[in-house]
Length: 107
Image (cartoon, one colour):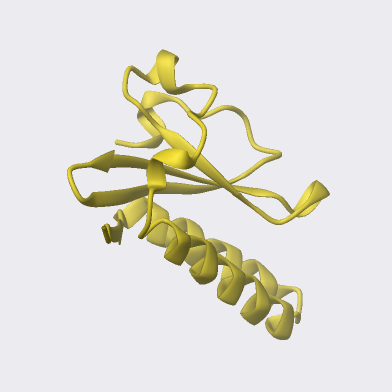
């Protein structure tokens, strides 16, 4: 069964921020590859998003937040999302080197 994947405004801003960083580094080709990989990972959430692990902060935030990883080593991002009915809502695209998420990060 297919799920509908939607991004919150904050998740879209996260993606734009990453792409701006690539642009500022004069690495637009790398940014294009990163974006293509992100879209491919998001596409995988259309089928069985519950397979992804709960985010470590899920209990602290007070809601079931799942995460899907993108990238490796120091270039790893956490795609943080919730599942409600047949909708997957992407909350944030969070660089793994950042602090843990808090309730305010979703507001």
